[in-house]
Image 1 (cartoon, rainbow, N blue to C red):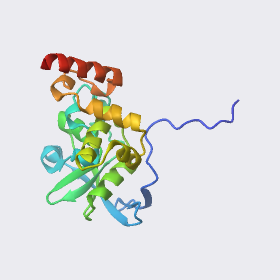
Image 2: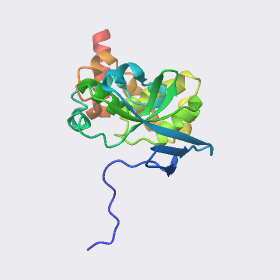
Image 3: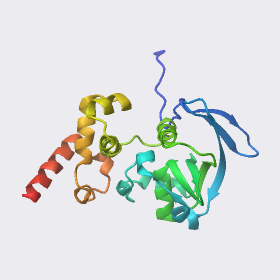
Image 4: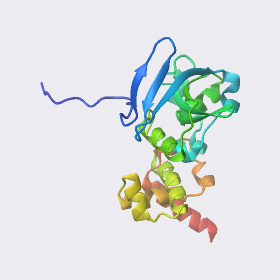
Length: 217
């Protein structure tokens, strides 16, 4: 029998944002940010009637394309979340609402089937950079697809970064940056024709770009 360690199957918490404390009574959790600052999160249960109105997603921080969250693409979560939410979402209190940093697929699923949502929330202020980095570090769900990465990179490009700088900043190859930006440039009306957009490959995006060019002639 091989002694090689088996790869862990399922979701894992990136340890760059480390959990250093958790108590069963208060259900609070302390995350250490990359800057060294410790931030406390507390458990809340958002009632089904409030999930859509009292929580929201900033795609620039969360990274998930919200328009791609169709009922079909969320089928596996929808089947279980009404009975068991295995991982709470992670959020920041923004006034009377909660910004979801991690867990937008769980949020969308809860809205579709009108069930409550478990969220670990902090009342502390986080900078935009801290929020984005924390969302990246604690990502517990399905990895972002090429288009979602591209949508995030577009914001950096519009901020004045060139593709080489974006690649260095995000830890990506320049080739992947190019592919991601191309995927993100496909018009939403074409993307929306596909119920599970995460299954689209780079070749599919290239074909869709060609189709869009033909339609624009």
